Length: 76
Image (cartoon, rainbow, N blue to C red):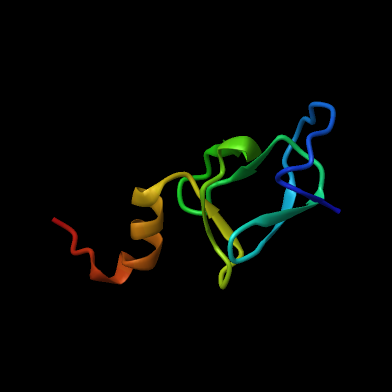
């Protein structure tokens, strides 16, 4: 298993990741994970937002808010 500080040869494709409290562990090598809200690829070296409970990655704080507070958004 790798963690985000293990620098190996460049990978391609989607990684499988286990999200931990302050870090994540790469279970299957790859270059990126997908945002659970938007579906956009997030390069592992840029991954900053995730949910340990949901085991999901997020592209940014807006995606986190959208996922966590979707029930509070009213269509307008």
